[in-house]
Length: 580
Image 1 (cartoon, rainbow, N blue to C red):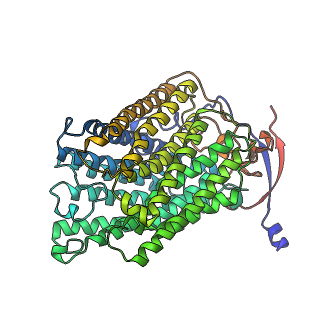
Image 2: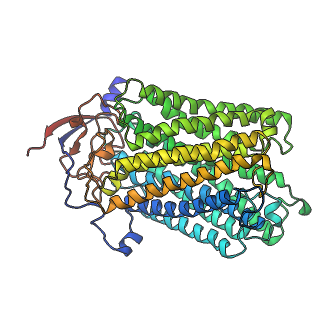
Image 3: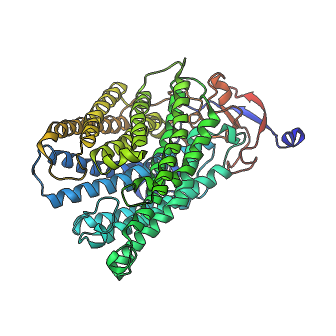
């Protein structure tokens, strides 16, 4: 065994290259012009185009949310009709889930940083990467045709028999989601191949950043689960257009079958949204506590465990649908089980903070916010996994609050942590730190004002999706609405200072956070091919006890970064320092 390990070690002559603080060319200065951006195969530009698209959809989904909360300011009609209210909350949910939360971290931030964290020049299939983005855009076009064509009023889950009998644009939206699924599948396939084949010399599986482990687990879910959603919405479309009896009881179908199909995808989809957020938290928490991550393999393997168990718990959405007692008991047990790998991550993150040299920069504020909000979302999810409690809480505002504490308090807050963390690398500019902290405070206060009262309303029996309500819930709804306005101001402030930073003169250093991550050993913004020289990795991404100089390594000879020295094989390095 020892002889075999020695035989796999490559000896490479390398030279240390400190990244330039004044790069002569960046990926922005190469391939200029609108057409160049539209036809680019550079993963960084594609990631930024995804980020811009997600921001646009988030603005639309957020505006719909504020309109919903404004309508709920009073117990009776405030300013819109009931049918319009149904369309608003349906489109809010569909936009936020399918066009914001699912693609936000993997397709936007993941596209930008994954090849850089692997030391590669690009993803494995650059043209397929661009095709994924345009498929995403085409899916959005189909979906938004519904806005001008009767809208959509079925709820974002498209439950039958509502969706089979609705006169709204169900077919357009389901076709849009169907097309969108291909983008998700192709992105996942691309990432899996990239991780396996394009790792730089020295990056073994034990030296992968935990963000890569999270994106890898997410990609597995995308590839395996998304086809189920595609088949489900295609069957729904066929039933509406061709009259085939699949879900409609009048045609011999079963509406509960739709729920099984939908949630078999949509519960793993929850982990498509949240697992990449776990990866971001692992990166940021080590960078700002300057400590090696506690329990590396526990965090890495728990991502894969979540991906696996996530396929087995879809039935906990259907406790009131008439399942057998045996089925509901099994799904309840599996719901508790999936909380274990998530709890492992949180315990390891807290242990990483212990005795760390913590810097309270803006990204770290979002990490602490994530730990607090997501923990509430997780604990309330365990309560909903309990059969007796769920019978009372099912389809109440308690579920709405739980869902937002997980998805928004988890995924979206992690996205903000990653966005602030990698913003200097993506743009080469620093944002205003004071304004960043003010925005984080507004978001924390506004979020809890919005959704904490909904737990109380739900426990008292307030049903979700209701246009009107009885007077006893008025103080809770009014607090929730005011909180949504505070939340909206926080997001507008983020948009302001990030956009303003692009035109500021404050250039970002190559590594403003003194991180050990490989992506920070390049210029800010990076070169078109990420690194001037192919990195050779001899330390892990969290070895903060090692001097920074040992991370600034590159091959002295030219190297294509696509497997010339073995994909992530161990290397024995002899180094010399670059002379001034």
